[in-house]
Length: 400
Ligand SMILES: Cc1cc2nc3c(=O)[nH]c(=O)nc-3n(C[C@H](O)[C@H](O)[C@H](O)COP(=O)(O)OP(=O)(O)OC[C@H]3O[C@@H](n4cnc5c(N)ncnc54)[C@H](O)[C@@H]3O)c2cc1C
Image 1 (tube, helix red, strand yellow):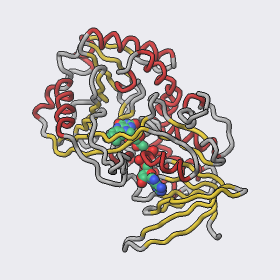
Image 2 (tube, rainbow, N blue to C red; image 1 turned 120 degrees about the vertical axis):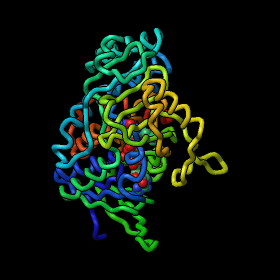
Image 3 (cartoon, rainbow, N blue to C red; image 1 turned 180 degrees about the horizontal axis):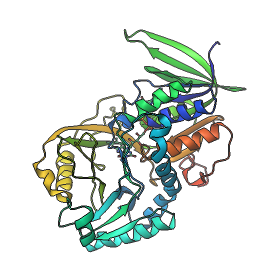
C-alpha cells in the first residue's frame, strides 16, 4: 500500500476543514475526503450565526434542560475567542463580525427566562446583560415595540457560511493537507498501527476508482452522516437528524448590526455583509426517508410552506420593517443534534484512533471542536473537560 497518512479527516464541512488545517499546521500528514464537494452540506447551508448564548431550543424545555445545555459553555467561550482571530490566522475573509447578539423577549414569562438564562450563563463565564426597553430604543431601534427586553452578548455575531469552509480548506492545503472531493469513505479495517480505509472516488465523467489508504487516526467530521460513519468503524454514534428551513431576503441598506434571536419563538436573523437578511431559527423542513422510515441524507429534502410562513412571521414580529423586504429564496439544510442538546466530541469508544465531533451549532463551535480534536490527535490532554460530550453517552451500557 503506497498511500499512508497520520490522519484521514472524513468530511469537508467547516469542522473537517478546520481539523485538517490545524492538524497539518501541527505537522501531521493529513488527507481530507468528502464524498461530495467541500462545503456542499450543512456548513454551506446554514445561517452563519455565531451564537454563544443558549439558544431557544436549549431553553424551551425548561430550566433543568437549560442547565444541562449550559455544560457546553466552555466550548462556546473557546469558540468565541477563536472566531475573533480566525480570519487573521487563515489569511482570508470569512465574513466574521462579532458585533453583538440579542435574545429578545415580548412578555413577562420570556423576561423571566432571560433573567434565569443570563444568570446561568454568567455562572459559566459568559458576559451577558439584560437590556430594558429604553436601552433597546438606543441599541436596537429596528426592533418591534412589542419587544420589552433582550439579553445582549457582545461576543455574538455572524460569519459567512458560503465562504468560511472553502477558505479554511485552502489554508489546510497551504499547510500541507491533501483534500479529495467526490471521495467517499466506504470501509475500514483495524490494523496494528491504525486503520486501512477504503475510499471510493468518482471522477467528473462518473468513473469510479476504489483505493485503500493506511492511516494512524481518523476524524469523523461527517455531520448528519456521523451515525453511518460510526457503523463503518463498528461504533454506535447515535445522533438526531433534522432538516431545517432558511430564507434570504433581497438587499436592504444596512440596519441590523446584531444577531437577533427570540426567547419564546424559533427565530434567528441577521443582516449579512452583502446586505441581505438571513432568516432561520430551526423551523422544520421535510427530511426524506425510505419506506422503512430511515433517513436518506443523499436525497434532496423538501421545504414545508407552513415553516417558511411561520419563520417569516416570527421575523416580521421582531423586526417590523422586514415586512417590506421581499424574500428571494428559501432552502433546506440538514444537521444533527443530540437529545440533551450537548455535542458529541471526543474519542470513539471501541474504535482506537477514531475521533468524532458533531451536534448542535457545529458552525459556531467548529473552531473549538477542531482544536479539541487536533489536541487529541497529537496526544495532548484536553484543556476542556470532555466528559459531558462523551460520544458514547447514549450507547447502551455506558455510564453517563
Ligand atoms: C438550516 C441550518 C441552519 C443552521 N444555522 C446554524 C447557525 O446559524 N450557526 C451554527 O453554529 N450552526 C448552524 N447550523 C448547524 C451547522 O450548520 C452544522 O452544525 C455544521 O455546519 C456542521 O458542520 P460539519 O462540518 O460538522 O458537517 P457538514 O457541513 O454537514 O459536513 C459534513 C461533510 O461530510 C461529508 N461526508 C459524509 N459522509 C462521508 C463519507 N462517508 N465519506 C466522505 N465524506 C463524507 C459530507 O458530504 C459533508 O460535506 C445550522 C444548520 C442548518 C441545517
